[in-house]
Length: 218
Image (cartoon, rainbow, N blue to C red):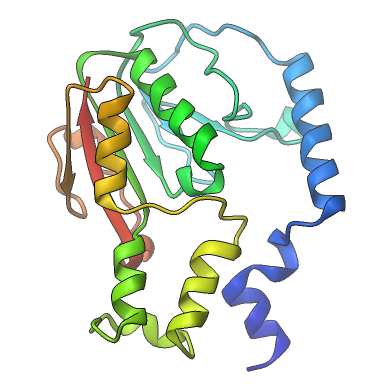
């Protein structure tokens, strides 16, 4: 395997955590928080947490700050901090492969924040890389062909837990447990493009192979 493949597979060229990247991240956060609105009135009924380049209509699309703020198509925000919205203002929320980029204590705080900004009876749909699938592959119990990209079970666990700036790992049981702890009335595992609010079925096909999907109701 050449270095280019390693960079593509594990994100080492772009996503490596080191003192320089941490300083840049914190500076960008500090500047962004200084100049961003502390309170916003939603212009859309739905909320997407961690949108990346996937900007959805009818959603408030939120992701980390960009220094070229005048070109941003999303709302800049550091997800370690309270969401800039009032209580019970959204009809639903969606988050795909975002929670794992936060340390566990901040991830749990974000779940509580999403619950806070959702109206009673609304749905929060969330997906993350599934620890169970990686463990199954490590233990030789997986028939998922996508895992063949890894040379070993250890390499797969390495990719899940130490690369792409992943800072926490999750399975359906842990997601359900923490969602219930922060106050959701119910939470359960679901499946790719299966859910109770069709507006929130925005799951990416290219992430299906490693994802676990959970829906929680306020």
